[in-house]
Length: 103
Image (tube, rainbow, N blue to C red; front, side, top):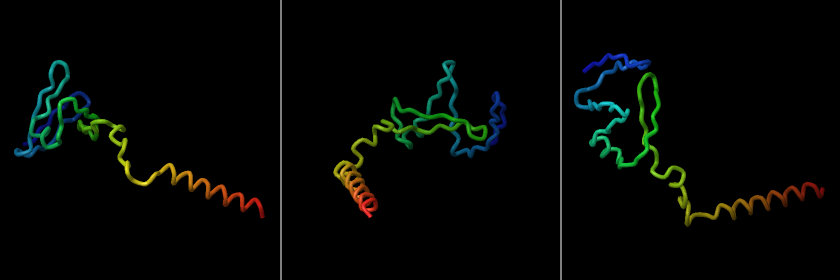
């Protein structure tokens, strides 16, 4: 199926295979519903945030992580103590510099 439509500044010319074609309608409030099949496939739940951008005259939406940077909190919990490793490295660097200056 081939569509060729001009929508403002965006050229909507594209080829959509019949089995992958999912259409939605932009509401008066400029809202778009995402088909359930896509929501299930991408594990999107109500309240999910999507980042929108235009690439090569195509509207592209990418789901954002649920918690953003907060999802990284505790990621390395139980792993090596990174602060202790940094302090040890700084202490070794300082000792090496002191030895250089003592020569």
